[in-house]
Image (cartoon, rainbow, N blue to C red):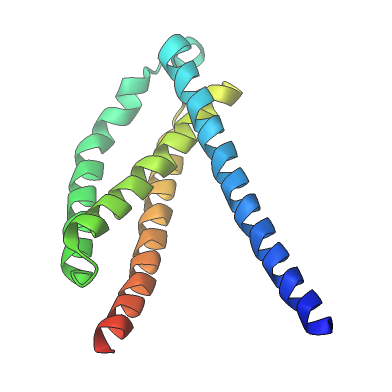
Length: 151
């Protein structure tokens, strides 16, 4: 009887964990959806009224560098983790990069924070952190794939 209780408790806690994970994903998607709706309907609030700086003047110097860095990161990941599959790796890494930036922009839109000179360093920090996290995730997947292929 005691073993049955432990087994049921383990299954219940597993179900609670899966439910919490799906709930967190749902909340994340809802926040992104609301933020993207606000961006599409009202746009982001730029700080040009207060400082005379346009948002595009802040972003334009970084566009080429971000695109170039993204291409290098995707090429490196596709070559390094080819056991997993290049398309899966590129899709996962690119998806995580886009998801993180979309979440940040949604947060900016929902909270109506002004875009100023501090925005781009925050964007670059999120970009770097997401790239590192995605590489750690790919490394774990590579180890699992490598162990599965050896057996």
